[in-house]
Length: 108
DNA sequence: CTGTTGACGCTCT
DNA sequence: TAGAGCGCCAACA
Image (cartoon, rainbow, N blue to C red; front, top):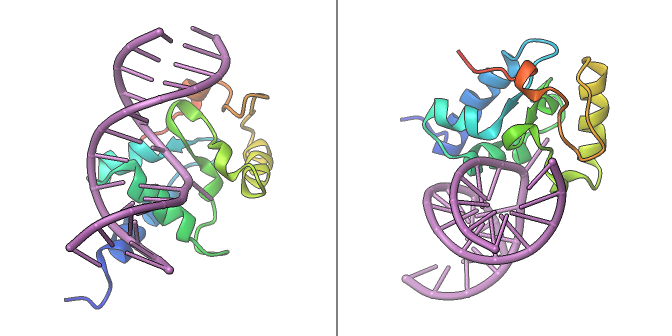
């Protein structure tokens, strides 16, 4: 029995999945959550708890339908959009990933 | 134990 | 197509 909490265990899974996202591809919290048997909320909480260096492509994780949560537009969102563009992923002015259906990636 | 909050998702209008 | 509201679940004070 690991001293780690369920949150830490889930965190490891999420990090593993997110770290496996290929370049130029994106996924959503719901997709990861369902694949790991967790809710999008839990995945989101894990992402919010990530530290600098914990995940190298956290920015490849977006909300449902490729929508970027406006909650993090304060500072993180800007950095996420910039990172996505750097990966070749276009983002519309509505904070949505362009051609999300084309870049949509499923963990597996 | 109770109340509040949230890097979300789905449905209705 | 766009916007607003409600629900689910877990962490935190």
